[in-house]
Length: 143
Image (cartoon, rainbow, N blue to C red):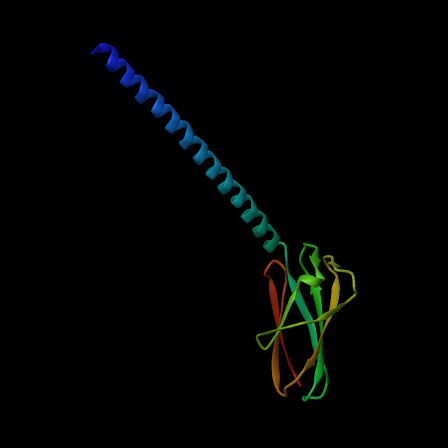
């Protein structure tokens, strides 16, 4: 009877060791994922805090039936942005655009000119420019 009890205790001990090791590996891997996500979140917050843009002007060229919109935007933050990763919305609708200068790197204190072509509609309109970090600025113009 003593030998069987020793074997059962040894089996329970080994089972506890295997389960403990497996649990530790799973918890450690999960903690690594949480740490990586926290680091990326902090990086994104820093980028958002250092990003700012200002629409200097939005000028329609043409008639109400069909016009092009020229938007001058300044990078007033301290982050270098990408000109080709902006979103331009006119009256809440995403529009395709061209930009000048053609270099995709948009440094702080730099200004770019965005051109949205073939818009239509008379009256007052609203334009919004959104950066890759989600920072935006609004302006209104009339045709």
